[in-house]
Structures are given as structure tokens and as C-alpha cells.
Figure 1: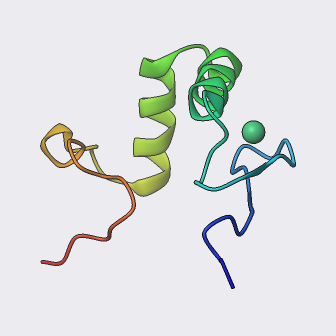
Figure 2: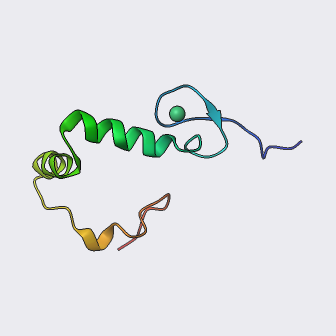
Length: 71
Ligand SMILES: [Zn+2]
């Protein structure tokens, strides 16, 4: 049995089936939609920082895909 093509659903919520977390370009689409909704990336950062009660550390964003980093 080949299980390579086991479908996931795109994380943007479009309902599309894909092998990865996103259909091609849909992560950018979601990012753009969020930025548009809140008024830009700076506003988005402010909102998230407010929610988390801490500053977003730019040094930790370089390799943030998939794996959880262990301390
Ligand atoms: Zn999608």
C-alpha cells in the first residue's frame, strides 16, 4: 500500500486536499488576508504580542516550520 499520497486538508481552510500543510501559495494567501484584515504586519505583531503578553523574538523565527524546538 502506498501511503505517500495520503491527503491532508490545506491549513488555510479552503478545503483543498494536499500532501503538505498548504496548497501551493495558500500560506501566503492566508498571511496576506490576515495582514489585510488587521491593517498590516506591524499591527498583526502588535495584536499577537498583546495576546501573548510578551514581545515577539525575531531571533527565533528563522526556522519555525514543522518541528517544535526543544530547549
Ligand atoms: Zn488553501
